[in-house]
Length: 255
Image 1 (tube, rainbow, N blue to C red):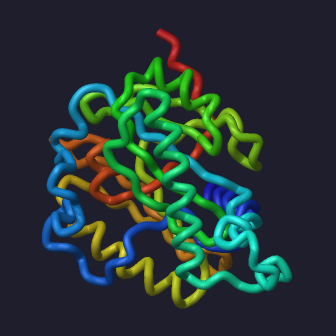
Image 2: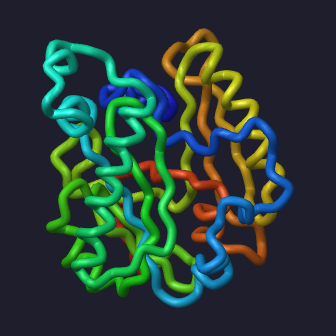
Image 3: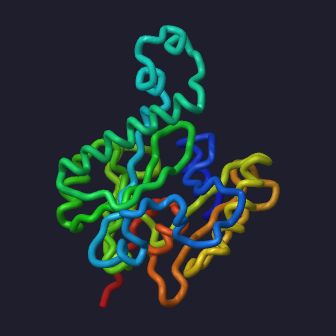
């Protein structure tokens, strides 16, 4: 029942896979991807120290507006021409720059960002060096902010609830684990196998795979990613480049 409800919620928003990660078919030898990490970027150990905010940004108008973003003067695109992968990359980069500029003007510093590569929206996770109380005020009024988590020394401290009026989202908060869902079809099934191999090779990450029910359609399954002893949840997000699953917050336990 839980799986069916999850799939129904996610796939109302998109017919493609959501919150999927890394494209590499070979598990990396190290868990920080040093070949792609700029020399001046802090390490994971540095990034988890103190108070940080992991925020999810998503633009639901992205797919509809991509033609205008890429080439506003191209009449062929406005008649329904299909953008190339390069066009999509250009539009995505423009959206990423817009978000980063807005964040920096608000006084926050972007430590790390990773895409959630889906075709129907701009979607990205952004780790901010900012205090949670400041973030709550800044992010609530920021375009395309969906939800966030305040981490203290890598541990989940409190949630910044979803604010956008999107199906299945308002008022919900990120679950206390990283989440990756794969869509249906042979291509997604193969990608799931590659991603699971990579995830299981990462240090400090506990991978719990939940397969789709027998004879079901719409998904190849999902994983919940939690820290192994001696590691933190923020480490898990940084090592796996996972996304959030939004859930109904549970009432605090009574003493």
